[in-house]
Amino acid sequence: MNKEQLVNFISEKAQLTKADSTKALNALIEGISSSLEKGETVTLIGFGSLKVVERKAKKGRNPQTGKEIDIPASKAVKFSIGKVLKDKVRGKK
Image (cartoon, rainbow, N blue to C red):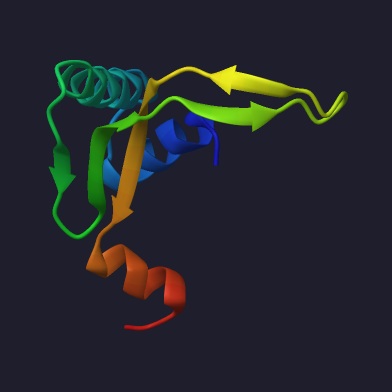
């Protein structure tokens, strides 16, 4: 599902116009992004949690040349699935 399909889904389910659905989705994305940028955890009960994690610097290997390279430390977003979503994905009711 891409953003346009998600907007259409929200529009149908919430009985909103596509313009209002787009605004709502953009606001949600902006809110989540802003919280993660501040280092906060975003928790949506039943769906899951998003949080920023620190990745340590490490050694890697260039797959084309086989030469060892340094991979610098970085930040990444980690998603932990919630129980309700996990059960739906697994086909449980």
